[in-house]
Length: 458
Image (cartoon, rainbow, N blue to C red; front, side, top):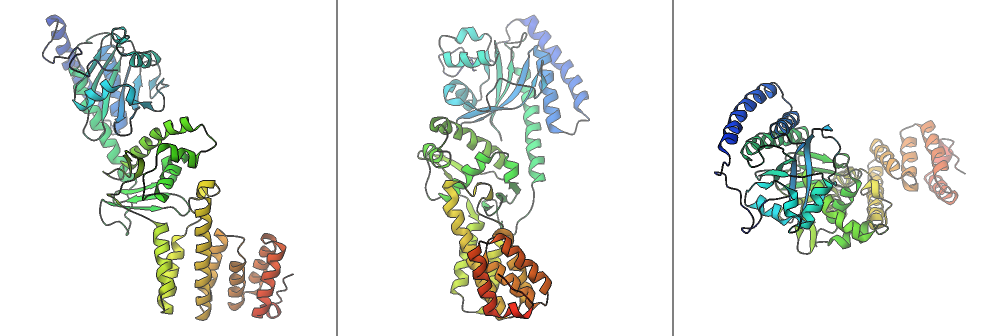
C-alpha cells in the first residue's frame, strides 16, 4: 500500500506542486468542491452519513473508484476497513478486503502511520519487484494506484483512495477531507457510547470494570454497558471469558486455540485470534479509554492496570463471609446478596463446552449449596414467603434440584396453598428421576406434609 516507508524510497514533498497549470486548476476546484459539499451536508445530523458523503466527494474529485477508512491496530497487527464508498457498489457495498488483514506484511504502511506521512503509489507496477506481498494485496483489491493520508488521534489508520485518475500527486485535498471524516467517526463513537450509558453502583472511576459472567456476559464501566449480544461474536465472548478465568497469567494464542477450539485447525485459529482481539478492542473502546485485553510477549491477558472484578468473584467473597458469620440476620442478608448475583450458569451460552464445564458445574453446586443454606435459615425464622421466592428462582435455574422442590412444596404448604403444592409435586415427578422422587417423598413424609394436605408422592 505505501509509497514511502524508509528514507531510501521516493519521498513526498508537500511543496513540490509539479505542473503549475494543473495545480492552479486543483486549487480552484478544491474551493468549488468544498463550497458545494458544505451545502450538501449542512443539514445532515448522522455522522456516518456525513463521512460516507465526504468519501463520495473524494472519489468524484480525484476520479477514483473507492474511498474508505482503514482502521489499524498496530499492537494486535491487523487492519480492516470501517466505512467506505465504492463508485460501483455504493456505500458499504461488497468489498474484496478480508474481514481482517494482517499488517506485519506491510511494514511501510506502519512506518508512514507512525511518522504521519501520506502514502502515494501512482502505479503499483513500480513496486512489484521490491514489495511483492504488497503487490499481491493490491491486485486482490483491484488497486492500480493508491493515495492514503494517516490519522492518529483517537482511532489510528488511513483515509484511502483507490485508482485516482487525476491529481495523483496532490494528497492535500484528501488530507483536508480526512479531518472531516475522522471528526465524523469520533462523533459516531461518542453517540454510540452514550447509547450504552448505564451507571452501575459498583463503578467508582474510569479504571473500574465490572463483568457479569453468570448468565449472559455483560461488561460495565463508568461509560456504560456492553452485552454479549452486542459483541456480535460467540468467539470473542469465549476468548474474553477464557482470559478472565486465567487472568493471573498471559495465554499464548496457541494455548487459547487448543483449549477453546481443539476441533478446529489450530494454525488457522491462532491466526484468527488477532482478529478477535482487534474486534473486541473496537467494541470496548466505546466504554473505556483503556484496553481490557492486553498483548504481551507471552500472549494475551486481562489488563492488570484496570480494576476488573466479576460477579463470580463477588459471589465467592459473599459465600465465604456468610460461612464465617455467627449472626443469623447478617448471614441471611449476605446469602441473599450472593444468591442474587447468580443469574444463571457460568457463561450460559457455552456452559457445556469442555474448557468451561468444570467451572460451570462447580459454581452451580456452590449456588445450590448457598440456596439450601439460606432456605434452612429462612425456615428457622418462619419466613416462608422468602422460602418460596428463593426456591422458585432455584428451580428456574436448576429444574432438577430435589432440595429446591422440597423447600418449594414446604413453603406452599406453610402458606396454606395445598393445590399449588400438589402442582409442584406433579412437576417434580415429571422432572426428577424415579429414585429422586422417592428421596423427595421420604423428605416430605418426614416433615409431615403428606398427610396434612393430601400430598401423596409415589
